[in-house]
Amino acid sequence: MTLNTKELIRYQRQMLINNWGEGGQEKLRSSTVFIAGAGGLGSPVAIYLTAAGIGQIRICDFGKPELSNLNRQILHAESDIEKNKALSARETLFNINPHVNVVPLTVKLTENTVDELVGESDIILDCLDNFDTRHILNQYAVQKKLPMVHAGIHGLSGQITFIHSPETPCLHCIFPGSTPNQIFPVAGVTPGVIGVLEALEAIKWILGIGVNLKGKLLTWDGELMEFCKIEIKKDPNCPVCG
Image 1 (cartoon, rainbow, N blue to C red):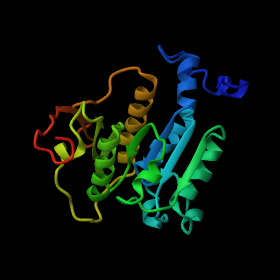
Image 2: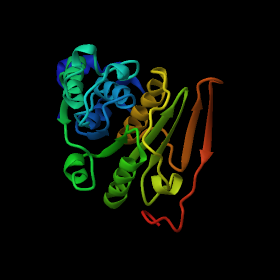
Image 3: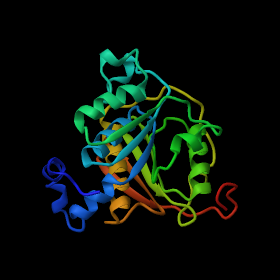
Image 4: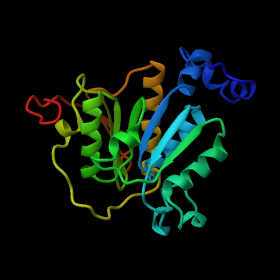
């Protein structure tokens, strides 16, 4: 799958990065990513993976944008409020980069649907807003030995880690419980910061460059503008990966 002339021009600046090159760009184009959620985190993740030239993006969301979402869910506009988020995302992403095949998935992610939704994806991006569904995705990733980038946000803070069982702790090792569904504060810039880091983690893993956040939880405090990297370890008694 060689790059065509337009692609060579479009991606020329990133191909100048050490160990990226034309071969790395072809790796991106032959890769498939699964994005769980087309909301606050899913928006920057999908936009920057599309701009980078991922071959196929499977983006999953069964909801519709609401007016109160639009401060952060930049995949969508007011004209998209009656549309499904995954379908709205496909329209936006096509306008950014028509070379990327965006597959909209409008079915709710559950234990019964996760296998079909993830499909043949190479990596999973957790852009969800609740731990119940995150744990379903985590268990599937552990079973299939798929890498998963987890991220979460609240207000002006966020967190991110790279999970790849059995090499790293799984999500259940780090956050074994759940939280009640609730409306929590969030500024649009917060998922912007953390979502871009999620996209970067996926790109680095696909290309095999740099160091991923394996066994590390990176937290960001936007009020103090501080990053902190915390070591995390596997739970030997974890019911998911132990």
